[in-house]
Length: 221
Ligand SMILES: [Zn+2]
Image (cartoon, rainbow, N blue to C red; front, side):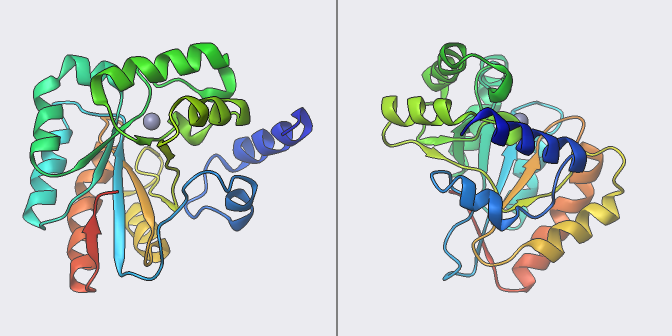
């Protein structure tokens, strides 16, 4: 993609800040990334980015267990280094883990070599075929280099962004956004982070309860 396209995309992102529902044209521009799973099965794939941390991740694990739900945790390598016991608990309870770089680097602002090096640092700890670029921002050259070095890698984006990180969003509105945009095969982003916790602790139990009542399976990637 040339610079002009980058500028347009960057401009759109800056203007909108974020979109709850990923628009079709973004999926069309990046078909090599995973935006959602098959709509054929009544399954929702929930994901948690930026942990593990002791203040939030145990709450998430307890809540998931309560609803017999499995999820995918895109972990920051440095947090895994700091809290290995929480990372081990995630895996022991049957959830999937994904690479989210070692230091949560923004791909658009990072040289490719440094980006891949940071990916590898995290990979040494996590060893997974799942990767989510922090902020969802990754250059085409970085996608190409990652795929060439790690042919099995699935780069996972999302279909629904909960906005739980948005401190201006009420927990109730966050819940409405998530429930109204999620459907069969959706990949939903939450965050096990301090910033998101006020909304997450309200939204997660209610969303899981609602989806279970609707007959959805909640699965890991
Ligand atoms: Zn992140």
